Length: 282
Image (cartoon, rainbow, N blue to C red; front, side, top):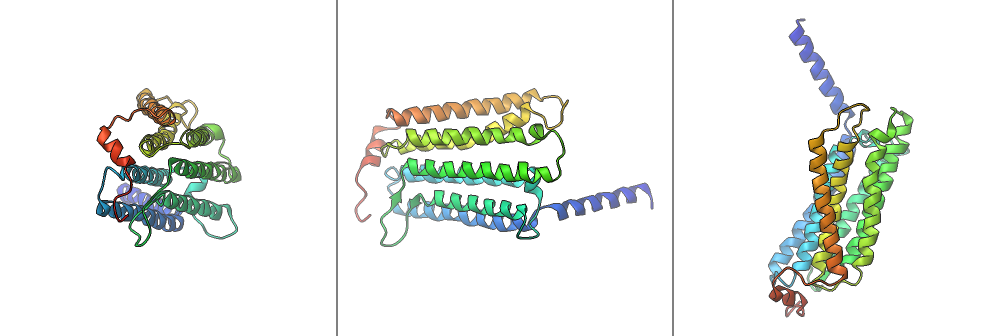
């Protein structure tokens, strides 16, 4: 066997081993649930479009946009996660990997509930738009589940085969979860009395929180390389730091505009339309 053939064989074997080690069973099952959840977003948007009166239902659109971003960012983060417990498949019921599967399922169900904060298109049932405090409550639940997921995948399963430098590799990645969980409580408190027009700014605060979570993860990864002694890529630090700052500004604006009932930066006619009684027949 020549060198080229031998290298090709080794590469094929490595690829096969990598595929076998991927959590295909868990990913296929949870991936299907993600698809159903994002499909529900499509159904609600289609019902909204058919209902018309776009300005009046603007809070419903922002609710659904928030849910869409939450689902999409979670899908990406979940798919590429390198946590020790995130790359293991389920091979039995009584094992921690099955607990990870249950947490994945619980998270996607919570995303579905978040989507159903808007309920349109059911015959005989009036349209419903949940207040921002409800969305903030489920956001708290989501970040709490993220935290439990981190504990199982980054601590419990990791400790079965510790690799050293736990905080550098995995522990530091839990900091954004804790920070955003605390901020979710603050948002719920500050948005509990929002009127209909300020549903928009409350959703903006929650959207900024969702993006802040991902930006903080990138910032922590850039500032704390997984291997001790690795050089810090300053361009990544600046990039992640810029997004983090932008999200903090957006979160602050959304909170202040909602809790202090600031005049919205939209035409007054749209504000009046949002506050108007439901259209006839609805």
